[in-house]
Amino acid sequence: MSMEERVQSLKAKHEALELKIQEEEARPHPDDIALHAMKKEKLRIKDEIAALH
Image (cartoon, rainbow, N blue to C red):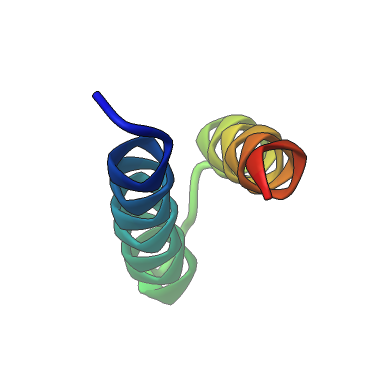
């Protein structure tokens, strides 16, 4: 996998996590633990993307 393909893959994962976070936040009683884990993973992916550029 080329570096560009890796970055594109990470961006897709980042966007998918953003959608999951939005869905969870829209629920009447969001799962705070799950939200925290998803946000932490989203930040890890963002950092990895930044490190590759």
